[in-house]
Image 1 (tube, rainbow, N blue to C red):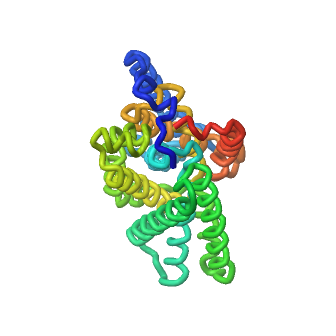
Image 2 (cartoon, rainbow, N blue to C red):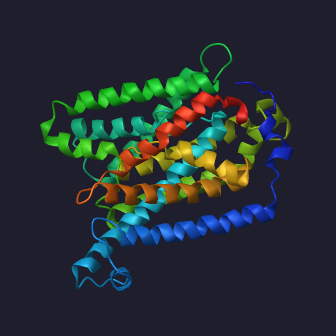
Image 3 (spheres, rainbow, N blue to C red):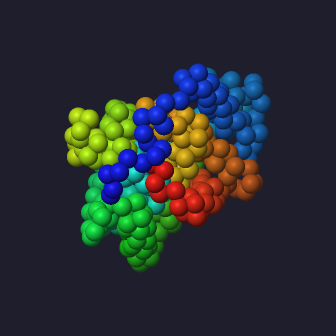
Length: 346
């Protein structure tokens, strides 16, 4: 990893008009609010405003109101998972200075998923708490493994080597996960459905145990904003400005791992949200992580809600899992980034 100061991460590049950022903040919050309303009202069954109000307040006298009561926790989960993945992607891109970094591409989600499947198949794991901490452990081990492999050889952990190591790790862990599932017909159906990545069947009972972990990850990531700005200038420059490079990377990475692990435990591995969202947010507010990270969380929530709504509509009367929709959205963006070869933009 080179310590040269990239053109786009000089102090001048961090400065954007505050009025512009505040205007985009208002826009993003408004879009998020509208997305939540659309998520509650649209799907395999459309419901009216009266039913929405009744369902939100707890009344389930009609089928439409019962549908709303089911969609409310689903929408809340979409907000939490999308925000977690978007924020984790922005942090990973900042830590590795790699525009291709993403919890899915770097193998973090696949590592979390493999750990959960091993726990289910070999140890009879059943509780959500066990899923949660096992997924976090798997995500952390995968992240450490990818960074260690990507750091080998000349030049250290370059963006290209990290992307290749992450892709290889994701493929290997996914293949191993399939090998575990194939002979186990008793768990194959449920695990395969979970592996696709989705938020259907969400409930507040399942969401609540994940909230402390998501909150801890959120705090760690947001507190790392200044350190990520310094790391973007290069390791030597960051150290010269007073940053402890090792601690800064470790704390930011820990926050991202907590977010990815908790999200994977409850939703399954959802890819490409952490790749697409940071690039969109940089266009809106620039590369200053003090603004980029909150925007990545908000925009990630919007993207996952939108993907969930699309999945409900295009496959009526059935549903398409949100992980499939995000793959359709993210794959072209990934190809575009690779073709542009904008590895030095961070």
